[in-house]
Length: 274
Image 1 (cartoon, rainbow, N blue to C red):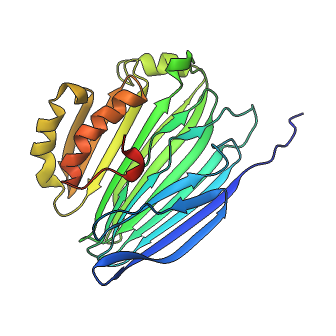
Image 2 (image 1 turned 135 degrees about the vertical axis):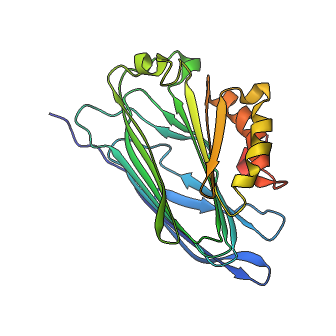
């Protein structure tokens, strides 16, 4: 018999609006294990960092988040540190993470958290839903690190479903899902068609009126040795880049080369700075 364990519950919500020429908080919700921090940044935009005070996510946890960007706002959301998805016991319900975002006309939302580290045996369901206007801009990053290679961990069992849904002007633009459910993850990841033995993967999605025009510059940047595991394509007002790396640090090095192409001269999130 499995003894029930205490599970974390968390909720956060942030609404921003333009005040003068700056993006300001209009409403804030923080509950359970979720907190938002607001680093001071130069310029008219606003930055928020998510914090999970429970120290990680275990099977059965429930996290909900909502972001609402008013017309003309500029919001960057990052995380305080990498999120850890811990081992689940057999029979445990998955951790559930649900995020919803609303991006009004001429607004910009950047979702640039640190990576998600999946421990052996982790069990998670995550879904991010974005509803955006055609004139708005949305930049999405998700880095996934499978196991702790520095600790000699070999992944055997995972149950992960990670989904992104983007709607633009009410119509479905992108439905992207990673489903990794296996009892021999290391062998699966070793296959050339899956990950070729690499231990970390990243997906970047930029939706904006100017996204497709950035593809030539991005492809030139991807020719750098640090970005050897990445490739990109653009269509229908959207640019998508995906890449592989041996581990989390190599992945971050590549992302530090890629993000300036997608973000111009804007500084990296405060929690990224070394």
